[in-house]
Amino acid sequence: MRRRALLCGIGGGTAIAMAGCLSAVRDETPANVVLDPQSDQRADSADLAYPAYGEPLPAVELPDPLTDTRIDTGDLDRTAVVTAFFATCPAECGVLLRRLADVQTMVDDRGLTPSVVFLPITFDPERDDADALRDHARMVDADLDAGNWHYLRPESPAAAERVVEDRLGIGFERDTTSDRVSGYDFTHAVVTLLVNPDGIVERAYRGEAIDRDRVADDVEAVVVGTERS
Image 1 (tube, one colour):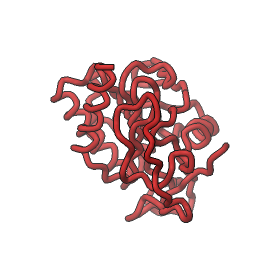
Image 2 (cartoon, one colour):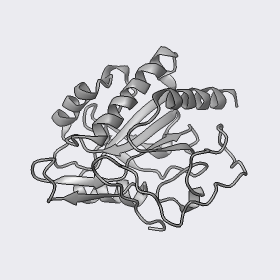
Image 3 (cartoon, helix red, strand yellow):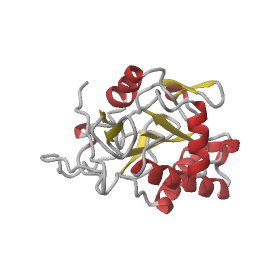
Image 4 (cartoon, one colour):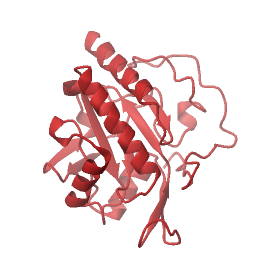
């Protein structure tokens, strides 16, 4: 893997500062993007563990166990919001997914549902079966009936590592010493990617406390911009 996986701590702070990687993001705008360079990106995209502004989202094909379909991120024709999580996470994942569900509602209120898809990928396929994911959707108030929210589940823990950590650069580690979750927990990065229909990352949001209005505005700008081009 050409990039190191970036882990963020459990507990209060979920984003680790990247020592030595705080150079300014380049000013030039890459091809095939709608939004201007991300002002709060901490480093050049090539220096980050995950795909960031102006870079292609690595193609992965995963099943959605709730609809018995497979989603290929290399063949999307819609603006996509992509993140990684585990359903039994007692803190940061729940915060993030609830906020993304709010963004889903805001997107619907703006009449953009057919143009946007939400793709949360679990890195805990041992526990996150169809029933657990359906319960999770109820917990975070995601609208599965809207047809644009797909939980993606790798076939095995090894597949989850290949997809989430190796391909997407979103680091995670199993933790059997934590007392937050029975059995095992995870330390993991919290990253959400906004990807245009050409498969290019427009935004990489760090941490669970995403600004819902900002994300919804960014989503709308990408949808409108790509539909006009």
